[in-house]
Length: 76
Image (cartoon, rainbow, N blue to C red; front, side, top):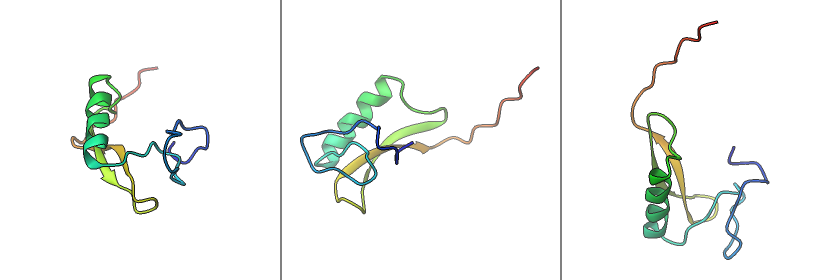
């Protein structure tokens, strides 16, 4: 969860109150998003994309849903 204080963040720049990793530019956030996609960190049906934070003015990344996923029925 993004609001947890234990979330990893970069220590070399200003911190966002959301405790998300901050990137100084769109290009840096896009590079991070592409790296996370290669590592398989995207949620099912999502694509990791950068966004401009209203709180701190820096860039962050998040999982943007691009495909609606149906819930999987559990077999008990």
